[in-house]
Amino acid sequence: MQEELSELVTRLRAAFADHLISVILYGSAAMGDHDERMSDLNVLCVLDRISPDELALSEPIFRWWIGQKNPPPLLLTEEEVRTSTDCFPIEFHDMQEHRRVLHGADVIEGLEIDRSFYRAQVEQELRAKQIRLRQKAAELLSQSDRLIKLMADSLSTFCVLGRHGLILSGREPRWKKREILAALEVALGVPFKGANEILAIRENKSRRSESDSVSLLRIYLNEIDALVRFVDALSK
Image 1 (tube, rainbow, N blue to C red):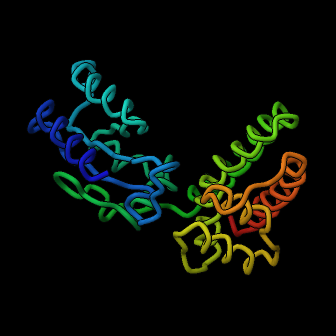
Image 2: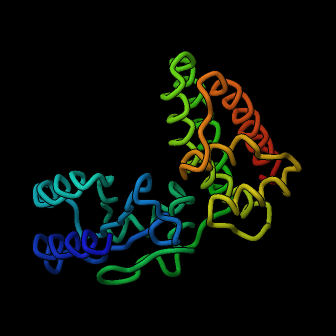
């Protein structure tokens, strides 16, 4: 991981020189919950301007980075960082809590996030991901392995959103998936048996038989529904 990050910074500095304001690692790798098999390396790249010229310089770097099975860096100007906290409060909140400055200035320090935008984005993301999970699951009910993979792939997102639900409710933030699920069980008064089993599957500690995948989905969807209702009830 460190070699990839160092190489990314080297390529960005060579391409942009003084136009490169900052490179920041955020997400699971910055908070110590990175799983090389399933987690991404999330990087914010801040430039002083972004025109077609900068995009052309970015292309070979992004192609290489994506070839390492990482998502493309988040490319913003310094002004966009200052003015986008109302659009991306979840992302900037996470960056404020856990980040590693790989190069340049710490452009995240001092940003202010409005609670009303923050709560609205958490609920919107939860509902959108809930609907998307249902849509995809409907295509895979007879394909156990793919259904299990769908649930395993979705767990990280729901844990992230669950963490933000905990923060919005005034509870102590949790960062490890298992800790988030335990805290949600206490906050919601609901056992998260499905999510914990999916986490065990992700960690290769458990495996469901083909006949059980649909019943696991049923439990998991009920837990997600409880989380949605929990966030919806939080003060606006």
